[in-house]
Every structure is written in C-alpha cells, then in structure tokens.
Figure 1 (spheres, rainbow, N blue to C red):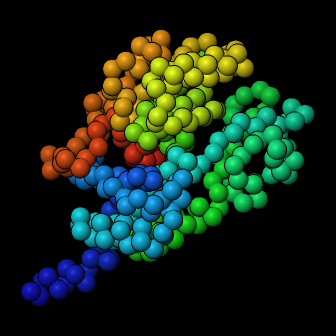
Figure 2 (figure 1 turned 135 degrees about the vertical axis):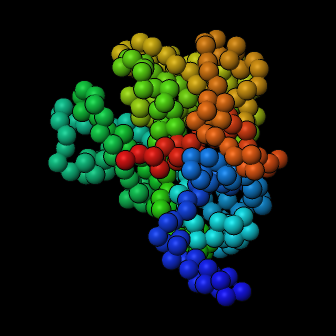
Figure 3 (figure 1 turned 120 degrees about the vertical axis):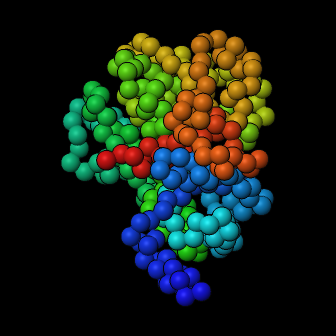
Length: 312
C-alpha cells in the first residue's frame, strides 16, 4: 500500500518527465484515438459521438465533448497523456495565392485582405487563423491555410475541459499530405497526386503538388460512384490545363469506402489504395486489435500525425 501511494504521487512527475502521447482524429461523427509505444500501436479505437455534439467541424457543446474526451482517456489508462489532434476536414480551407508584380510582398496579410473577394473563403480573413506556406513556384506563390478563429478557440476549450495537455491542432490537408510523403519521395517533379477520400459521410479530392495541397473539393455521400468519378475526372482535367507542368498523374484512395470495387474502374485511371497497416507503416500490437478499431484505409490522417511526431 505504501508503494502504491508513492507511485500515485510520482505519476504527475513521471508524466511531465516522460510524457505519453495520444493522437486523436476529430470529426462530426466520431473521435478516433491512437497511441504508440516503442513504435507499435497499443491503442486504436473509434468512439462514436452523440448526434449534434459536433457539426461542420465545430464543437456545439464544448463542455460535454471535453468531458467525454477526458473520461475516455482516464478509462483507457491514458490520463495525463499529451494530445495532438487532427481537426475535422471541414474546419480548414486552402487556397493558392500568386503574389502580384512577380515578387514576395512586404505585407502579405494586407495583400490578402485586398484579394479577399477573389479567395472566396467561407470565413472573413479577419476572423481566421492563417498560415502561409511558401511554394517553390514561379511566379512567387504561397499556400494559404485558414481556420476560423472561433472554431479553433472552441476546440482549445474542449481540451481544456478534458484536462489534457494539448500539444497541437493540425489542419487536415497538411496532415494528409504529410501522410503520403513515403509514396512521394521518389516521385518526379512534374507529378500531380490526386488524393481521394471515400468517406461514409462524404468524399473529398485533395490535389498535391511538391508535397503540398493545391486544390480541394468535397462532395456529399449521396452522390453515386459513377457521378463522383466523373466530377473528379473533370477536376483533374481542369487542373492539368491550368498546370501544364503536371505531366504525370498519381491517384491514391483512402477512407472507409476506398476498398469498395468499382470506383477505380469508374475513374478510368489507375489508382492505388493507401492503407498504413497493409503498407507496414503502422505496426499494431496484438492487444490493440478490437472490434472498435477502424480499418487501415481509414488511418491516413492519424499516420500523418505520427509523421509529425517523427519529424526532427
């Protein structure tokens, strides 16, 4: 009993000195949790959310959602763990920005404000958290990633209520691009990668050039596979007209419906399914397997978080 009391008092110090990490993928329908130990997946679980708790990527009841996450970590033995989370796809928006006069502006945000109507973002720039990523393109171009500031604050409040140390919130497009890095390392410089997510609640096309997202579009789940494939073909044709340097095309599929037969044929172009488990990128320990664990084709976002952990 005495030893148990000492261990209990030491637990917060050990958690600070040797922090354990939990990776969470957030969505309107569920939270997917993953934790690794010595490179092996020791916890992998999808936890469905009550309807209405999160909508459009934004928490509707931050306190209830925070309590759910906090209780979950305690029940699964991950109390005091540090958390890195992937924001829902609907929470972030990407745009390519070509800077005027062929040079980098001294005040990029002022230029963005002048071009706000052209950017057609669903949130005013003044109300968004912005990140600009320079691209090695001519004329000078940057990738703009915008997340509504109130949405970001809402998720921070969720994790504050959960009582966990939040080490970062990631935008989905950047995380997914990082996740497919192993497949792009030997790609030619003129390759365009079409990353297609076939989800239960909808589908998304993310175009990747030189390892960064350059275009995204979403469709509802009700769209028939043949119609979805036709619209994706149209997007690819249009983009390659705008970017004649993209001579090679690679199509990668992920998401719960990625392994379903027929879509690749409807797309009329060769496509590969990205499964971090089947590819050996993630190695699950035996006790991590459960009926609540998502399939490997659904883990690309979480794998992107793992890649962030491994980056120097």
